[in-house]
Amino acid sequence: MNQLNLRTIVRGAYDIQKLRIQTGNRIVGNFKAKLGQEPSHKEEEIDAEGKAILTELRAAYAKLTDGVSRFPRQATFKGNEVISDYTELCLLAQYFELEKHEKQHFARLGKILKEYPIFTEFLDGVNGIGPAMAGVIISEIDIAKARYPSSLWAYAGLDVANGTGRSRRKEHLREVEYTNAKGESATRIGITFNPLLKSKLMGVLAGSFLKCVEWNDVEQAEYDALPETMRRLHKKTGMTQEKTITSPYAIAYYDYRHRMENHATYGAHNDKAEDDKGKRITSKLRRHNMAMRYMIKRFLVDLYKVWRELAKLPVAPEYSEAKLGLKHSEEAA
Image (cartoon, rainbow, N blue to C red; front, side):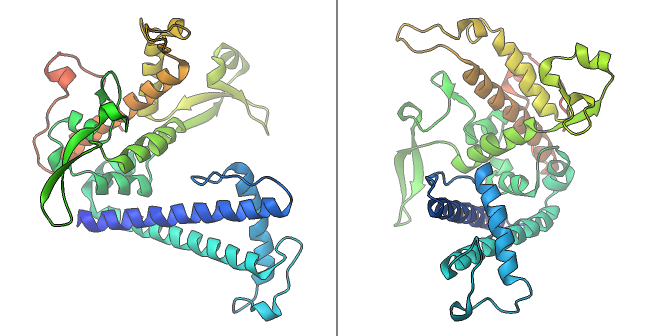
């Protein structure tokens, strides 16, 4: 169970994913330009319109290649109403090959992770976490170095520095040690956290937790008594439904956000207030970000406890519990 090899596999899979997304966006941009539309410059993800275009292109590509034993040659290529030239056909072939390789990499990753107890005993049972996210967590964290839960928070960039969340801002940079090209120990000014881990936890996992919901049919009277955010009318059946949050971490998010909405400083009543420097004190977005960070920190505490126990390492209580006598409610994954 070599962590370095796992990290290489995980990062390789994400590199292929990134290239596939970039290629897809460029194909969508070319297609839009062909239709006289303004192409998008977004490279990080494929939006809903882009996905719809790729679906149309996929169907057109299938028509041209279905039943063909070998990839069409340029000399004999005949396009259709969507894919009109050979270059477009080759670009789409490149995209679909990347998509295939990406799926293969993540499928293999799922098999490899079964060798890691923290996956089989914990992460695989957490609603909202799949093999890709589990791979990032296991390959990027050395649990032996995380003596305290706060050690994980700091490594993931979720601690607070100078009154705000850790970031790449100048005031958050620190002198860090590294090994230079000559193999010598040296220092430089840089970030103190793992940027990949932070981006996946806050940018992917947090949203995944919030999507862990179920919709169950309820009677009209129950439906009428529910808050607007916890009910809906099913589009197809017209049934009245209640929203049930199925992730304990999502519940932690909503509880914390509610607390912040009534906080003396960060509460909604201060949304338009400014400090003595003219800076906005708080906002709905700030409370959301605070709650997102809190939610991931609660997950990391559970991860720390289980992982350290599996590794037969000492498990330290949180600072708030050990020093302040405060205890959080039990959160089973």
